[in-house]
Length: 219
Image (cartoon, rainbow, N blue to C red; front, side):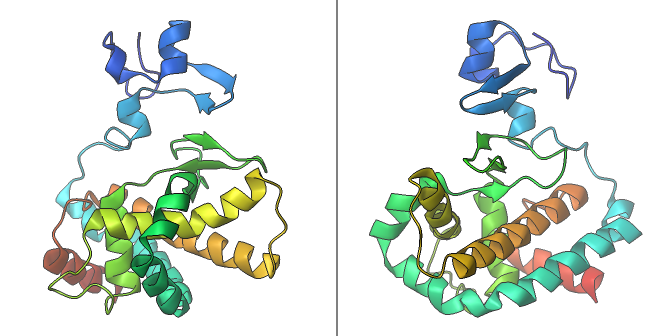
């Protein structure tokens, strides 16, 4: 089968999601798990964008994306105590992490999960969640990191998952408007981190180099 996104012809089962493989076609719409219109490689972001020329890391688009990421980072910093609580409660992370994800905002976002309210979610991957912590709550993860990137990713997904769980089970939460607002802003922040790292090809950049790069681009 040929992926409509990356144009590769892939005949290995592991390259496709189950609904695509069972249907023997690369595009499956209306499945209970969401819409599928590209191979796993594209959904997971490895083929979202081609290798980035170094010059693009400092162009106008990179600066706009970085500025938006830093603006949203400033807004979500008030969640630091809540983050610390989630990080200390493994039971909360275990219960809700699989329900949480970042809301798709762009057509190019990989639509991996359909929510009850019609939104699509995707997993931006733990390296991007970790970078969200680096820029949003640097005092939580110091140079001698107490938390690995999986734990940090689980913490963010658990917070987002609380809202998704309420929608799924039709529960009315106390302070529902506040919870929705918090989760919307947290999701938008993580989305901004993902867009920035994908455009600049810096997802795998280590902490000191990435933070120095963000400083040089964002200020």
